[in-house]
Length: 332
Image (cartoon, rainbow, N blue to C red; front, side, top):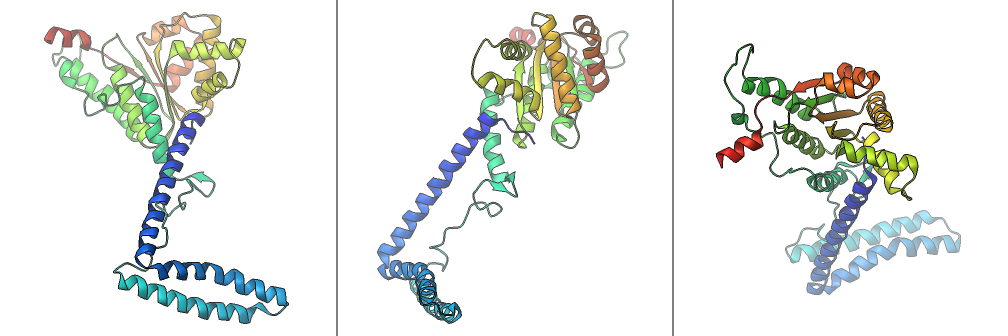
């Protein structure tokens, strides 16, 4: 699973802030208990110092430390019994002075067996959702809010089914299956059709669902992405930010490339698009391309190699119907 370094940095900051806040609350609770029963503070201090004191004494004398360990055990058992009795007298559980990690899998470190733990992945997903929300309306654009009522249920001459039936059976269901099954195997989608037919809504719904699972998602317009690739190529800006942006596009678990075809098509743009499509296919990373152009027009606009890879490796989902934005405006 690939992670965006900047988003992970923010996630780790929040993760650490919350961990420190929990630790502060725990220490405050301990102090409250110690103020009620000062002897508990003394017992806790004695338990912490007993081991180092007895072992250090045995080593300093050059004697066998085993008798010291036995004395330590006896002394500790007595202190622990006193501690339990004092806590019980206060009506408190015997482990109330021992801090327990919120995540038992990683002990609140965020990592387990060299991998990001699910507790930190939750923070990452939340930060990524905030990032995506800057460009997508994730609050309102979901699978639940996608209404098929905007599509006609009439079957026109020469068509086998209505626009509503097509959008539900072929488009909506395919997008939902893509999102809910993400991670099982790499998949790619080409969403194409006239403006105002729901491509952005379903793209946002997919981004929301995939991000919620903890996968890294990059959503950006084709024009902006190609601009970042060009900046990196010709060095118009210094620093690591541009390289980071290019890396995110190539390495994200899911890339949603929006509005392909609205940019000025140059030899460099064709090269960058080929690099994106080919690299992500080779590394088995999923991509969604959204465009107002048909596959035929994409083939005319870009190279045969690009068209071949998209038509051969992507599921083609044509959006049909009337411009929903215009229909909403008429209804208002």
